[in-house]
Image (cartoon, rainbow, N blue to C red; front, side, top):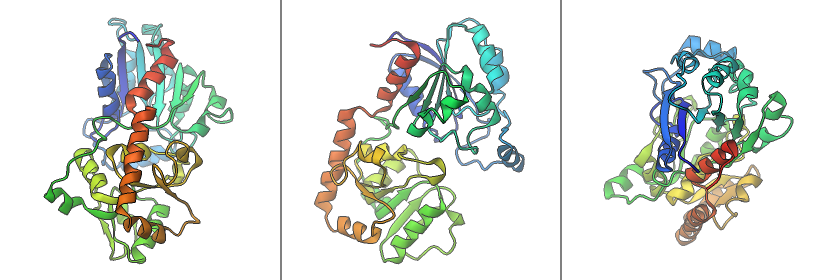
Length: 350
């Protein structure tokens, strides 16, 4: 594919996976300019203000970054081939029409990892913009069904699996200090959700040692003694250290997002971690059960399953190695996804 001039519009706060995709696009030979949808002072952990929470309930978030004004006044030169929007919930259809006037030949691409049929994610602005995107990309296979996003006027919709980053999600050598800081029998990296809390409570109350890194866990009442909660997330190399230092890495599916897979479904095995994943047919078709990952569901005696795998370190390593090998072989890196998306939007291939 020829080199493209891409304007990348996303919430570019520290910790965002958008940065991984931007860097990969640049390494692919494309020219990328960025426009952040996040307020200047925002971080990934910034708590929303009261007015933000009210507007969220009304499904009309405020454009605190001024992105709409900037997009509606884009100069016609230099040429823009693609405007790539990531979860751009403050951008309405009128803004996309203004972009089209300045750049009639550019392609407008939407990308999001959330279930956009969930009212918590589908703002009024985003809903009004759906018919103006040339390509709507989702990692939720059910969003691509005719009764979901296409019913809201999407011209063209593409389902892609989640992905890992070849640089950010690779094995890391652990120092003695790393092992002391991050070692865990069972770990989970992610935001609190009540079903997750109850599952890790069950594990800890059965006598197993569990460590948690993530936001929102202060909402868990009376955590058991065996549950070590960091009350903060981990990013970058520390995320890799947690995965590599943990004997078992739990991967939950978020109920509010109707998850069948998540980013961590690919990141954990890419880093080389042993993954115990909440079951979905979609994910088990990507990583074979008990060969490339281990799965559990509501009928599983999870404490006993964890005890079995804790007692079999050689089998854990075999599964972890096979999971990483499968991801590398099958092409689940960001570049694989980005190439597929751009080819679908532009109509060109290598």
